[in-house]
Length: 225
Image (cartoon, rainbow, N blue to C red; front, side):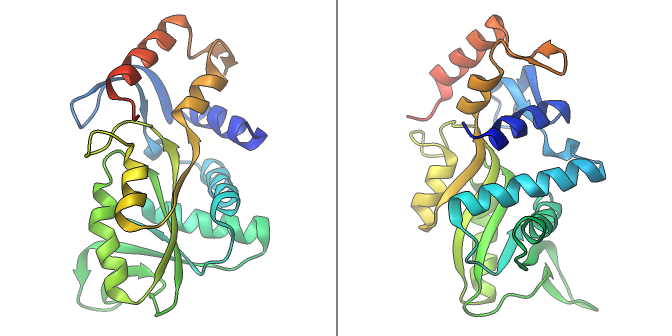
């Protein structure tokens, strides 16, 4: 596993974004871990997060694109910090774009925030985590309805590796199969477990034997094939 992935895993724990315990998800599933990207709140955390996204995008999709798109609402700051990270790490200038939940009819009108989209634009989408693919189902038609763009890929921070709506493959793979563009994550839950199992992080072991048993049982029931 690359060093930046190991650092990102510890960064999620240190930022209180990735927690282990007993959680009930929106889906109703009882999960031994929970990720909340809303816990990234400081300037330093957001700066570092943008650099991790930038590096993962370059590694998985390259830099041959024009726009970073983040779906409202959590995707808005992700698009901004990722564009900044790409500029800082690689000296490449890309635009940021997000959608609004409601169309604005005065001032800066329309459905989009940030850059407008133009025919021929190559777009990379960013999200925090994709559990069901619902947000992509909502925002992909918005993007493609604005201009004849090419989506180069979708990057999320964590691939939970759980079955999606179809009940067989994970949500990221379902998105890729449905829309025909590649998907990737900075890290997968398998990598998180591998790196943190019986390893101290912030002075404590966050995945001990009992937690590992709970994670294994969870994926026995909900893990993607």
